[in-house]
Image 1 (spheres, rainbow, N blue to C red):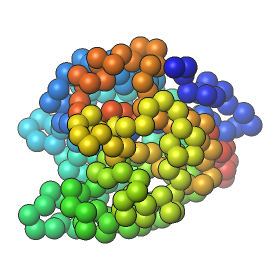
Image 2 (image 1 turned 30 degrees about the vertical axis):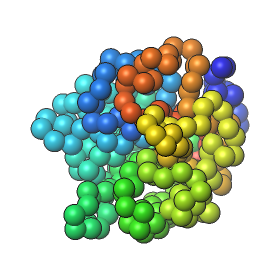
Image 3 (image 1 turned 90 degrees about the vertical axis):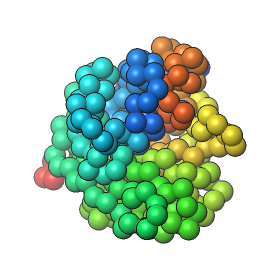
Image 4 (image 1 turned 180 degrees about the vertical axis):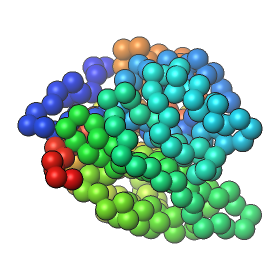
Length: 251
């Protein structure tokens, strides 16, 4: 499989941004394999789910960033799992961590968000992880859309573990407003859950202003071995190349 289309080009001030969304299962698996996968994907932005969130979680986040040639941006324990890492060409303008309402008996969910300038573009990013409960997931899908709108930015990328495939109500609620990048421009593999029932439950969404050049599981990408993909965590990563319009110089 070839690399993502258009991944090394920029024109008229726009920027091609490589975004990786990845559930890393709290670093409970092969950390060296995880680092190799992330580095081989050469992301500008990593939207993580299930980041470490307990004892010495900040040190674990920094070590992951260092092992992958990235920098820690925001999230982790403060969001109950979602986290954002970025490459060195990203300039972070602002960050915000927030939590969704708590449902008794269920794990509380949250958002890691950031606004960054990458190349000639300004991009807002959201990482999240929705509930295991179908009813709560559907309600949280609205909260996801509310969070994207509240950022007040024209160009937004959302990455997450949505815990359901595209034909389910919560995923569909988001896809009715934002663009499901894999559905727009499929590239690579589709299934992201390595355990039965083997579905696409992890995804990257964008606002309509962003051009999707390709999106999918990076199977066969040079430097990404099948062994590493399955040793790193129980989810497969989703990698997208996005062309983001040039930022307004007055912004």
